[in-house]
Length: 436
Image (tube, rainbow, N blue to C red; front, side):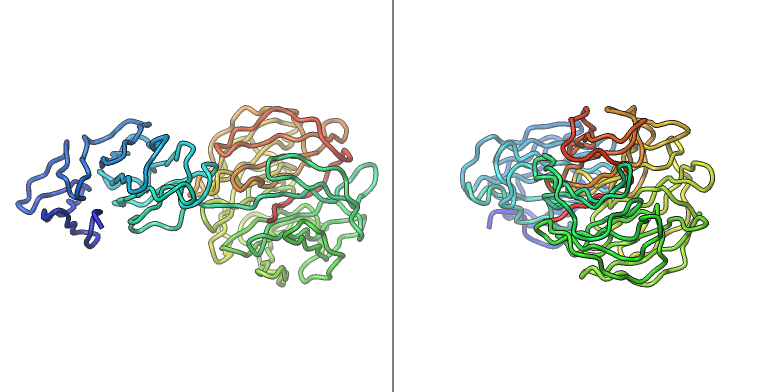
C-alpha cells in the first residue's frame, strides 16, 4: 500500500520517518517543521500548501493539510477519477472537532453510496486517506483514524398520522423518499389527537398516547413498510401534548405532556417498540413542546408551555438520560414541530407565541440551538414534522385560523422551502415519524 502506514503519532512512508507535532504539523525526524509544503509521505502523493479557505477542489495524487481554525472547509472531489487515484487530507491545526471538513464527492460514489448524503469528518487531529476503486464503490477511505462510520444516514420515508379535523380522526399519509405526500389511508383503530410519534428500531416508527376526549395509554407501531398496527396497551401515564424522539442507535424516548397539570416525566421505547414505565422527569414540567434527534445518537426536547410559552431545551444522552434545563435561544413558543435533517442535525419550526409564527431554529450536531431564522411558508401551529430521504425533513399540516393541508420541505442544509399544497385531509394535532 502506498498510503501512510504507522501509528496515530508516528507516520512512515517512502523511507521518510515523520511525527505529527502537537499542532497537527508534520515534523521530520530531525524535528524541523514544514508548515507550507509537506514532504511526500505517501509514495507518489504531492503535498500542497496549508488550506485555510472555506472551499477547495482536490486533485488526485495530492495531499492537503486543512486548517479549520477559522471556518469549516467544504472539499469538492474530482468530477472524474480512475481506479487507484489517491488523495489525503489531514487536520493541520487539530481543530476538525470544532470546524469540520465536508466532503462533496461531486457526482461520484463515496463508500458505495450515491452523492446524496452529507459526509463529514469531525475529529481533532484526524487524517483521511481515500482511494478511488470503481464506479460501484467510488471513493473509499483506507485510513480515517479515530472517526465513526460515515456518512450518517437516516430513514428514507416518513408518515403523518391521526389528528383533529372537526373531530378526532384516524388516518395516515406516507411521505416518499423524495418528499411527496400520499393521499389518506385509513387507520383501523382509535381516532385521536395531541399524540406523539418517533422512530425506533432503526427503520420503524411508533405513535403513542394522545386523546380522543379521554387520555389514552396505547401505541400504534409502524412497520418498515409504513403499515400502522392496531392499538397496543402500554405502560406509563395516559396523557397528551408530549414529544418524542430517537436516541441511541435504535431506541426512543417520550417526554413531558399534560393531564390535569403539566408533567415532567419520560418513557423509554426499546428497539422492539416496547414502552417502559414512567421515569421521574428532569427539567421544567411542560406540554406542547417538540423533540428531535441530533448528532449520531442523541436527542433534544425544546420549547413548550408551562402556563406561559417558554424557550428552553433538555438534551437526551445516548442512553436515554434527560439533562437539566438549558436556557433557550429564540422565540418562546408552543405547539411547534421538530425533525432531524442532514444526518446529524435538527430543526425546530413554526408554533404559536401569542399568535402563529413562521420561524425556525437549527440544532447543531452537538445540540446547540441557533437563534431564530425568519420562516418560509404559512405561519401555523399544531403541525408535525419528520425526516425523509435519509437526510432531509418535512413539516406538514397544522392550524392557521383553520386547519390546513400543506407541507414545507427541509433541505439537507436545514433550509425550509415554500409551501406545497397538501394532499390529504386538512388537520391539526397530528404526529409524524420516519421509517424504512
